[in-house]
Image (cartoon, rainbow, N blue to C red):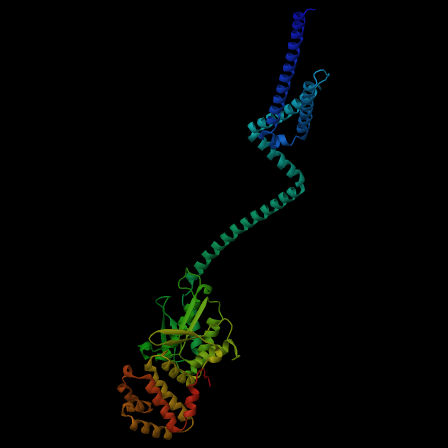
Length: 465
């Protein structure tokens, strides 16, 4: 062979080899590119979503498939390094089909879910029906028991409604009958009987009440000698007070009209000094009547005001004889009137007798809690009671004369202290009284008589002796 022929043969084989190597390199690069694209797609966020991530078998099959691809890529690379060596690539078709089958399964699930979303209302309705069917089957016995109990309750309720209707009809019938009976009776007959009975129990026999013949709603006062002329004007203030008080008791317990029912539980009773113009002989009787007819009844509230300590003590003794304790359901208060009115809570053991109360008035005046006009009268009563009790009236008169001779300004006050000089009270200008000077002058009287210790004891704070 000549040289040119040899060059042509060599050139022919050299181009074929190089072309094959180029094709192999192109195959390698394409194979590697596809593997990288596959890995990139598998790293997308969609593969981390719950409905895909829960399928572990998918990722196992993908891993098996990519492993084969990686192996084939290495084989191609090996072929490039050694072109004369024969290599066989692994068939990945079966693994790819397996991956596609798994993906199709997931797609079917997604499709089914989307179909359910389209029928959301229908599915929810089916779920509710199934839920209550299951619940009913589980609690069937309890439901039957409830239904039977409910039926019994409804029957009882119907019976009660019927009974209520009958009772209302019965009540209406009795109200009509009661109204008829009231119209047939004399409105004040019972009250007149009660007032006369109480007058007799109090020893009052000179007069009584009688129902008017002209009107069933009126009554009049009659003397025992049937003299009906100007009787009311002939009554003393005490007798008028008694009639007024006893009539008030009837008003407290009775109705104001035929149509009204007397309901004491909603009434508030206020009694203001019921024995202010009565003899002391009536203190216990009036206190007993108030206790039995007012306090022991079921009135909503009761207010009793009084200046009389004996009456006050009688009410407390009737409610609770134990002087060491406050009666139950009572609230005790002391009312002090000066420029302003003060209402002070008090306990039973702090109650004073009349003599102690006069000393308390002097203390209240000194503290500005009582009007100064009360001071001269309290001082005079203390001097009369104390020196009268210890039989020292002569000693008191000497002390009054001595103190008066030393201070002419206080002579009107000292004459006022004299029991027989009531008319001198008009010479006292209460608006100019100096409380502190008056009390000091009062103290001087006890000093002159030799009883300054008694003054100091009674004026001591919190003294109740």
